[in-house]
Image (cartoon, rainbow, N blue to C red; front, side, top):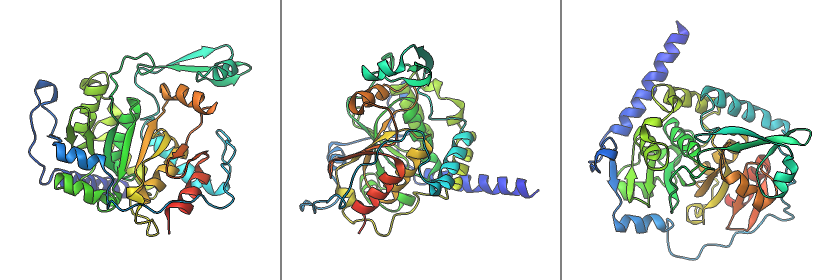
Amino acid sequence: CSRQLQLVRVFVLLAAALAVQLWQAPPFINLGASASRHRVLLVPPRTRCLIQCAAGSDEPLEKLSVPDNFQAPEPKPLEVTRNDLLPALIGGSLALVLRLLSGVFVVGWRPGFVADAAKELKEGRYALQLFGDGGLADTSSAIEGALPRPEKSLMLYEYEASPFCRKVREALGNLDLACEMRPCPGARSGFAEELFALTGRRTVPYLVDPNSGVGMFESDDIISYLYGQYGPGADSVPLNLKEPLASVSAAYCSLARGMAGARPEPRARPDNMQRQPLQLWGYEASPFVKLVRERLCSLMLPHVVLNAARGSARRAEMVKKTGRFQVPFLVDPNTGIEMFEAPEIVEYLDQVYTD
């Protein structure tokens, strides 16, 4: 009975969250049969200009300094380098199971085998060495060029602990799409004020697609739009991104991580939102990447997630760039730092982006 009561409470909480998302929903524009199910706002030129500009004043920003004696750590793939990471990694791994591996594979993923994995990596192609010289190589609809690709990066107002935002981030990973994240912890901090200025609401997720001039609320509508615009079709959305499974399981995932990323860091620098977006190579399902994403969100730092799930074309891009594939990989244009290793990345962010 107690378990049933807990389940009922979860459904009530989710229903309340959905009601808030639907409350005062703005009027939508029918874009025709292909988008008639979506509630969208066409983004006017003024709004596009605001989106392209950093929040805050035009005053020069204080130059950021790299921590004294800083050295990027040596990459150690698939290793738990510190015992204090275990609880976070266990929580992240539990979330992976609860979400039925959502966000792990790009659509159309198929495994393949190569005789010499080291040679593949040396020549700038992704391969995972498994036994002897042999290894696993991926192919997918993205690698084969079967998915339409946006010319300009998408933008998502979101925060890490929101189950509705998680669904959208997983869909972006499934479709191998890069996206600039504008964190709004708790939908009341960070870029929430910018979102309110643009739309009159502080509801997340909110997707901006500068390629079509569309801005869109509602996670299910966003996912259908993404699959229709940049995937195999809106009717191809997988079961683990549909309701009621998606939001219920995603809510438990956030609870398993202690709702990390739902609140702003009190020590965050006040000019964080005005900084150039950082780049984070990774994918939603990785518990190592999750640690960095949670910190970026609580520090309210704009960042571009370069999704690199299994079957991603970006895995080969990273091999060409760094000589290896390992995530998370952070590129900070504000300091020029590039680094692997989740715990060291989190420490670096705290040292640079807090007072």
